[in-house]
Amino acid sequence: AILYVPASATSSSQLAILLHGNGDTDSNFLATSGLQPLADADGTVLIVPQGIPRDVTVTLGGQTQTIPGVDWDAYNTAASGNIDLPFLDQLRAQVVSTGQVDPSHVFVFGYSQGGYLSFLYGMVTSTALSCSAVLAASSPFGGGAGDPLISGAARKIPVILQIGTLDSAYSAAEQTESTLMADGFPTELEAIAGAGHVPIPGDVSVPWAYCEGMSL
Image 1 (cartoon, rainbow, N blue to C red):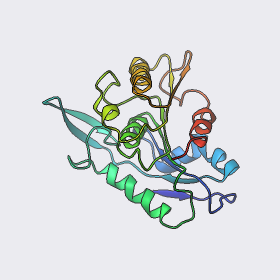
Image 2: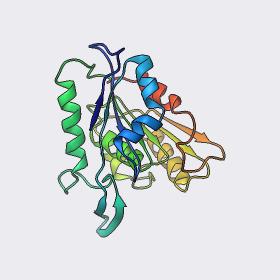
Image 3: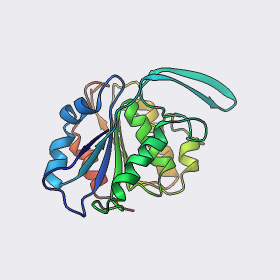
Image 4: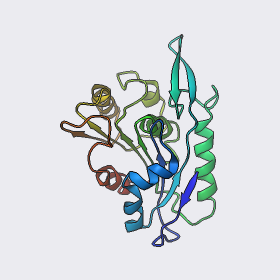
């Protein structure tokens, strides 16, 4: 993982965990996502981990399926073999333990497959994260009524979804927003008219500003 500390950082800086999409790298996502200038402007410390491409097997509702060639496991719990959740937890805990970031302002920001993991990590780590930004993605389980991630969250973590209206996951993002709002989660959906999945839809400063305004 890349740890990026801007020159403007202070001991009360917020911390953001940035999750790239499939086939990308930590360094390229930091360089091309438009998030580094935002961090420079407000002193946000960044953790940018590198995903590991692999096939992921998930069992839900008694049915098992394999999700091929993904960089992040956005489907399983740590107890059922997800290696990414404890990895993110260790990175977050290691930086927070330095006392040089504000533990009440730690958020996750993901795009595409990283967006699905951002949603999962936000739900299962809701008591330690201030916000989850989910770009070009939704709940990995579709976000409908009874979504296990939403119903299982220990805290109503704020969530912002930003997605193009031509993205194949757009309807799932709408369902995710609807279920989150019905369950009392602070939620926004930024629908980018005419945008597809690539490149990152819309202005990344919008979900960034939303999460900046949230705290534990």
